[in-house]
Length: 455
Image (tube, rainbow, N blue to C red; front, side, top):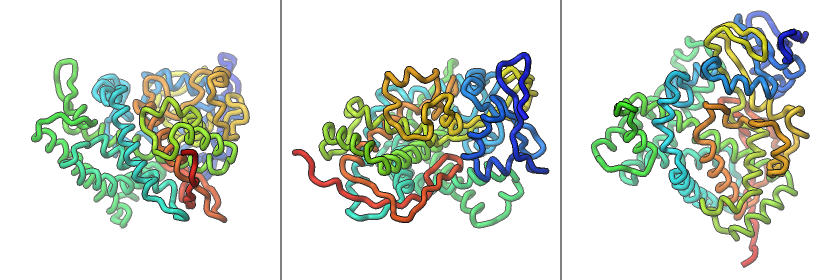
């Protein structure tokens, strides 16, 4: 039943389908992509039972914006963020608002315009190698291919030294996927005793995490001994100083690098996989994409300089991120007794919101379940409320790497489309997988050359 407070224009409701002990948790985790969007029928703010506790789901646009723009009240925390901190530590993506300004100042120089251009050049190089390695009729797992690509790119952005970094990059490629799977298991099953049992999965996770941390420690030490400045993220962190001249500690550097790995690998990989799949299943979109890349690239792979000339490619990326935002479920923690949408929220409460659900709200987006890249034309963007899309969160905690991810995905998508068509394997059924990111799951696709075009 929906309850409307006389003091608020926003409705307060209760999530349906509660069962003893688990509350609404089973419904959320069993079929979240169906369940969460339907909560808008219950209210703008919806009480959700997670075991014995009560969480508050911000469902509609205005209430979500209230959460995003009151970071000192709704701080980083809640079930997902608390589990992420086990891996990411106190990096810029998970730290409290009380230290966020300081943390952001340390890492911000790594995302200046000229740095983004350099990282995008790394993407251009590696995507050229990737599309050059495919063969006619080859069957690929599109998410696996994109994950390998973004892991290589992110690792090289972190450690650019050819002599020192090659082994580190190889270890990141080997260990990070194992660690990320372990993170998801701990997020979905928050029972520490289960993860202490010496199963193969738990042992693999602990060993991979130890290897990753070993790589980071060895690279920090090697860069300090080397004494030279390298044009990469680790060098930025080593050179960073607080207002009083204090350098970052080794632990702080470790946390920021782990955060960059988490954000820089899975988010663009998932976004690219969705963009490639959605384009392949919409012939009109694919035709427009091919027209643009043929005009700009003529079979070559894209470079950072091509980005401004690929507006339609970029619209495809933005629409794929809207429909299937990799960060599909976010939690916060109310640090004081407060209100949300005009309704009382006790201190310590978990606050939930879902970019996936919000991006499917027909009150915000016309035909929200339709893949329509042209909804990102400037004249149509003016029809949307401010900050309608939160693929990279929003407010002062918006992801620092949003511009970089957008550039990298646009360059990669254009480079693939200039050379190849991807076709879904006959008989395969799409099944989105809401894990730590919203992924396309196992998606076998066949590589077809596009043939000869204009000279």
